Length: 148
Image (cartoon, helix red, strand yellow):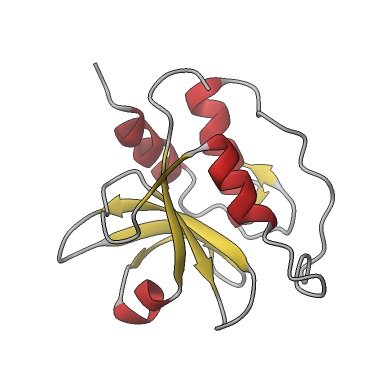
């Protein structure tokens, strides 16, 4: 039986090269980081668990509302930040004191750790999980093994 984590990485890799398009979630046509996660979710479980409202590039910043962090806790399986594993969803704070609003899927754990994410100006790419990225990790989650 294939683990959900392995399925998540395989699906995320299928999105590599998809252009960055704010609010989109269409493999090959365009996506942002949340759209990538939504697409992986659909591949793993079928329908998305919640409707995602429209959002601006600076969403949640003025109100300091931890929208993604709450959604992760509600829909995924929270785990300690230091317990990395392939297939984890990683949530990042791009600046100290800001809300967590960037995310990716860990594709390789360990010394050569990597993650897949949609990044403005680059599209969906697989990046090294370097120390500067690690310092920005706000939370780490696993996909539920069964149907959510």
